[in-house]
Image (cartoon, rainbow, N blue to C red; front, side, top):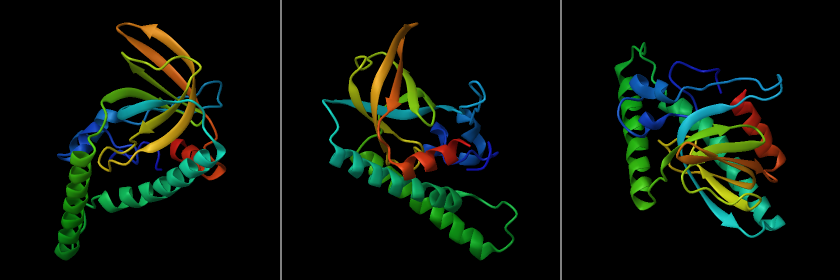
Length: 196
């Protein structure tokens, strides 16, 4: 992923679900900051949901890792397909770009109608954990499956197995930290590439 590109990136903001992506995508700008020079994070409001799991079996973790890997391989292609070259002189290519944008928007809208996106929450994504704030948090020390929609324009979520290791009351809500369980080596590597 390009460093904080002017047009957003794979982690498209809320405005990318519709409307003019190049005008409002800065609403969810990529923010990178270091914790002891060892960790980078991405902060934005993104659709997020979670469900409690008694315990993840190894077969389920492998299935989730494979699914997430396929999705993360698709995201760069989706981003490249939806970029607009405003200096593109060929009107035929501009027409193809327009049709491609329209098709992606239509597919995204159909998927959203069939399976509506969860609420937008303040999310902080790292390579080892995900943090968010909400009024109805999971219990501390429980295992959860986190559905995180990193690009609301493409309503298909990463399904991240995690363990909730911290829940802190804040003003009118709770700050939740969930540490990832076995994501798989390929998914972990791709996630780190996205953050860097």
